[in-house]
Structure formats: C-alpha cells, structure tokens
Image (cartoon, rainbow, N blue to C red; front, top):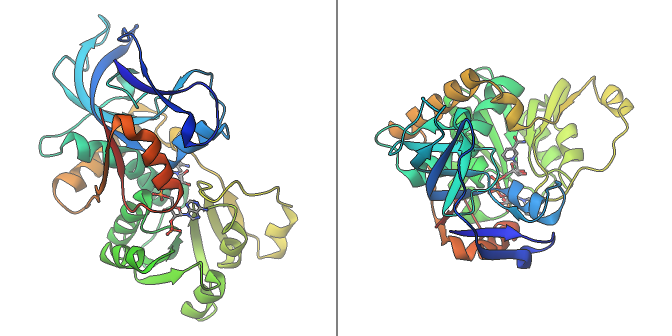
Length: 322
Ligand code: NDP
C-alpha cells in the first residue's frame, strides 16, 4: 500500500511516498481502508521535529474510511462499517490500523470526506468551548485565525453557544469566510494591534477568554486582551512556539490564567469521545455545522498540501485522498 512517510525531519521536501506492506491488526485493533485523510497543522510539527517521532514515521492522525478486518477480540466494529478516528498516527496512507476503542461510527448522511474534515477540528473546537474554558451565553471571546480549518468550525460552535465572537484573520477573503461563519467582529491582526482593537470594541472591559492557536506572534497580545481573571487557552503555535514566560506576569496583568490543552486529554475516555463525536457529527448531518472542503489533494501531493497550509494560502479543511 502507498503511504507518506518521513525518514528525516525538515521542510515539506522530506515527505516521501513509499510502498509499505499491508498492516495487520493486533489485539483490539481494526484495519481500515482510508477514503479521506485530514491534514492538520500538528502534522507539520511532527514533520519539522517540533514534536518527537520515531523514524521512519507515517504522517497524519485523522481519517475516515471503511473497516476491512478486525482482530478476533474486537466486537464493537465489523468489516464494512463506516468509521472515523483521530489522534492515532499513520493516516497519510491507503490503509491503517487503529485501536477499535478510538474509532467512532460515522452516521448515515455524513460522507467520509466530511467525517475526515470534522473529527479532529470538530472535537477540538468542542472540548475547547465546552471544557477548557466553558463558554456561557453572552461571553465575548476571541478566536485567532478564524478562517482556518479549526477556526471556521470554532466560530460556528461558539455562536451556537451564544457567544459574541471576535476573530483575527490576515486577508479580506478570510474575513468574508469568518463573517459568513458567524463572527461578529473581524480584526486584521497583520495591519492593526488586535489587543488595542479588542479593548476598543469592548469599551475597555476586556475578554474572559482568548483561544490562541497562533502562539509566538499572538500570545503577548492575547494576554493583553483579557479582563482580570481572564484565561488564554493556548492550543497551538502556527507561527511558532511561545518563548519561556515569567509566571509573575499573570499576577501583575490581573490574576490571569493560561492553559495549554491538547485534544487527547479531553477524549481520554470512550464516553468523552462518543459524546463529543455525536455532537459534531449530528451538527454536520443536520446542516447546522458547515464544513469548507476546498483543498482536496491526492495522497501523492501531501507535500503540496503542507506547503499551502504553512504559507497561509488555505482556508477551511485540507484533505488527502488515497
Ligand atoms: P489552520 O487551517 O487554522 O491554519 C493555520 C492558520 O494560522 C493559517 O491559516 C493562518 O491564518 C494562521 N497563522 C498565523 N500566523 C501564521 C504563520 N506564521 N504561519 C502559518 N499560519 C499562520 O490550521 P489547523 O486548523 O490545522 O490548526 C490550527 C491550530 O490549532 C494549530 O496551531 C494547531 O496546532 C492547533 N490545534 C490544536 C489542537 C489541540 O488540541 N491543542 C488540536 C487541533 C489543532 P491567517 O492567515 O488568517 O493568519
């Protein structure tokens, strides 16, 4: 089977198409034929070596497809089932094995492309808004990079919870998409100081929460957007990692909170995974959560997808089709 591996870390040039043997499901595992694999920013962190991986490493940790075989001890899924999963490496491939307890059934009415587009970024938006900082109706929240894959889902979910949503984007085209997703206030963080703008738009009140996935270039401004006892939920570093930080500043800036959450801790139990996935897939199936699937590449073009994502050319979701 074909798969995209890295044999060394580096730029998108290190992505290598390889022919690998068909994997065999071990105890508790299923073998799945992948129909669509999601490209996520985290894949670039593994490719660069920012997150460690044992080489050679098959990139990708989000996909949807059809179960081909299961180990004898697996009863929850059977060949032919339509499933999706995330957080298990190895999805830039035609086939993958995954623990059956990490799979979720994809309901009728949701395609594999939609499932692969929604599961990682949908579950992420869900746990950030419901659990990392649980949004209340009327909360004013800032989400950076609002036209990205995560951003467009995040805005829709935050609006559904009754928030007033501020978002940052780099271009007019991205602003239109974020507005269409429901954002109330758009800030061009390349041209203007977003913290000053947020203070203006809130008459100096500041925000209870900023969801920051851009990191290096935004973290300081995100802290400045907060009201006393507000929280930065730092969930990524698309512009690079945040440098070391002196905790005393949280005190002097108003008894602030910072958390650095990751999805796996918020879907650690089967119940958490199922509840969140049901909310996400139900919303896709009934049309209340709209997905933007504009960037669809053959698996063999994975390097192209990485270059587009990192150069800020994309909006919404990127998918690889084996
Ligand atoms: P996106 O589609 O959102 O792409 C990243 C966006 O970040 C770009 O489109 C761009 O939007 C913005 N950006 C700002 N500065 C830069 C820069 N220097 N280089 C590149 N992009 C930049 O990606 P994803 O939806 O896949 O991921 C978004 C973030 O969420 C990532 O940081 C990712 O790691 C994080 N994440 C975290 C999870 C967790 O559980 N902790 C789970 C899932 C995602 P613009 O041009 O408008 O500025």
